[in-house]
Every structure is written in C-alpha cells, then in structure tokens.
Length: 355
Image (cartoon, rainbow, N blue to C red; front, side, top):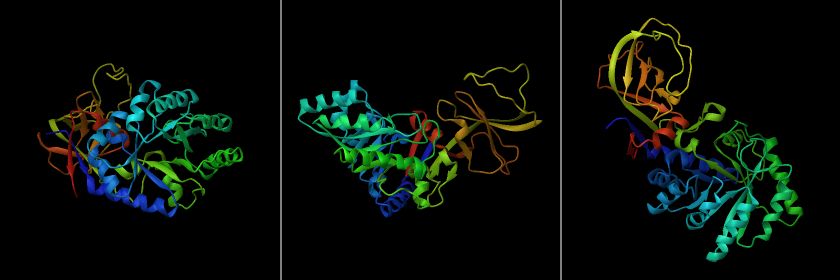
C-alpha cells in the first residue's frame, strides 16, 4: 500500500551505536529521543540494542506505547509537564525536565501521595528563548527546589536550535557550568548537565565540548543522520535510514506557470511561479496531510519537487532519464519535519526492514 515509509532498523541502530561510542569518549550519557517517530517501539528497541539506556519523548502517550510494548529503558519526559497530567507523569516517567517552581510543587504533592520520588532536570534558557529559567536568574530560582523532599534535582539542562536556531558553542554552554558551580557554592550538588542535542554533536566531533557537559538528548542524528540546524549530513552517520515511497496518479505535460490571476493557496501561501515552458509533471498520492513537501529529496536525479496540496504532490520529471508511467513509484529521503509528519499520518504505511 502506498504511500509508505521504509524504516531501516539496522541502519538506525548503526547510527545510534556510533553516537554512543563518540559520547563515551567524552564521558557523555546519551538519551535517545523518540518523539519524531512517535515512540515507535521497534525504533526504540534498536536504540536500546545500540547501548542507549535512557529514552526521551515529549508525549506521555508515546512513552506509554513504548512501555506497553516491552521497551526496556529509563524514560525521560523532555517536554515540560502540564500540571493536569502529573498523575500520569508519575506513573510513566523516571525523569522529567521542568522549569516552573509551581509545577515542581504540584509534582512533589503527587509524589508524596504515592510515597515515591522522581528525578528532575531544571531547564535554563541561555538564549534560545524557549523553556527554562533565564540564565541570569537561574541560580536564585533553582536553589528553591531543594525544599521539596520528593523530587531529586539531579541536573540542569538547556535546549538550543529548536525554536530560533541558536547554535551550541563552548561559550554559551559554559554558562551552565558557571551556574552549576554557583549552586555548588550554595550547597546544591548538580551532577548532570543535560545540554546537548543533535546540533551539539558538532562540538564532540571537533573536540571542543566543554568538560562537564555530560548528557546529550539526540533524535535526528540517530534516525536520519542529519543536523538540520547546521544544514549538514553528519559524515560518520548513515542518511539512508528512511525512504518514503509514493505512487504516480497522473503523468502529463503542462505549462509550468498557472493560468489566471494568482493569490494564496489552500494553506494561505502565496508564491511566485517562474514560467519554464511546457514541463512533464507527475502527480503523486501524497499530500500536506502526510508530509512537509519542502523536506522531500528525490532519490533519483532529474526529479524536482514542485508543490503539494492536502492530498497531491506535484513533481517535475522532465529531466529524468526514466520513462515514467502511471502506477510507478517515486522514492524520497525525508527531512526531520517531513519525517515527523509522515510518522504522524495514519495514511502512510510504515514498513520495517531489519537490514
């Protein structure tokens, strides 16, 4: 059935193993992030097989899916928890990222009622302007956590690259080490600095990671072998881990520029279309409901992705050497964003290959 996504489990495991080996050389613990694959148990097990002991996800339903399917790992909730879901957090999670004292107070009460304790990592914003205490006020805020008896403050962390594209550097990561040292001076021991993600792998590859950064939360590099924030393929990793396939519904030569007055499309986008004359265009059974079309990269040369509507993807095959026909299958590699949407779509069949 098409469209379908071919998931090469062995290649994903190979990527995970290579990153685990790199991280060990820097005394860094690797958390495998499963959110882009919706906590897929088979992919999660491939990460665990490669030596990853902790898996992180932003959705409790994904964590439950992995637990229910026998994934043997510690689980870290990487999105800040809602107060309304804390009962479920306590049920499913071993460690949680937090950034609000009010949330910690509520979490502490739930834990106390169940006679349990939980590890927490307090997030610090060092410039990305996403979650976390602003770094200038972080010490004053974090020191207040120690009064809550049922939460264990095991570390501080940060997020970079995801919202505004701020890159990790030795300079901005050193801010966290300074905060750790100030907290130590106040009697608060912080053994874990969770400050790495796929974009931060660059610092390990180039031997510029500040000593003391000892946890990375990595998903994209494991699953795709890429680093979108630095716009690069990671040389030591494989990029042939995912293959999206779609079937040709229509194949016709048409003008390259639409006729009539142009305005916004169904998604509110307005683009300038260049007139390139008559071109051979294939329409595929794949749309915005299934993928982010700007993140599709044809595996065969001479094919160009044009645009997508909700249900159809238009590609230009004029320059392709293959004599395409209706019913043929065109294959693509996918970006992080395209993978996220295709994994979410129930209309994209997932096919697992143990290579």
